[in-house]
Length: 184
Image (cartoon, rainbow, N blue to C red; front, side, top):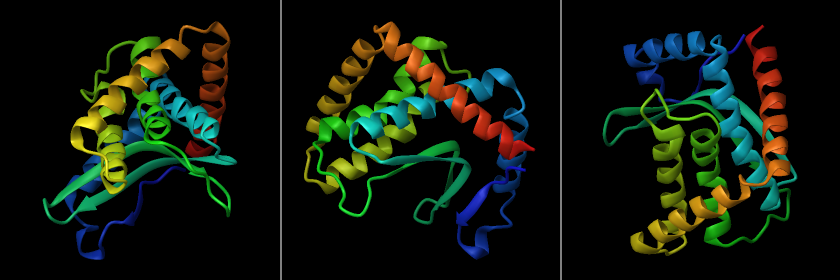
């Protein structure tokens, strides 16, 4: 059975009612096929671009909670994928990172349609994560926005390929099988 990963939440915040409410809602949503399909498509796109960037393995993590103590806010993700680049690591440029960050939202928007949850396919969270990494690399906010927009165009172009769309849907079905197994 899937449970919300709360390992990144401080012990004194674990009883916050916002966590329980979100956990109940997201776990219920995982039983809805259209919701689950959208989540898996989003994460599959991230996974494919992570592998293109050199990841040797990508792991699905369903339902994660994070806490921002400065704003007393929680950040919840219905699922996420984590790349393993091995012991040596991989060098990549910011555009490569932007492509993997933007891929989920672009794929979901173009292949499924609008986002009834109001996050444009997870773009807000993905942009926040990409921006933090890019700022740490010394990119200016203007350059970050340029990279993000170029990455969107690149992923949109890739999605014009029937072979790429088949690969993406195959990966989404694989992630959905993993998610369904975790729901048992």
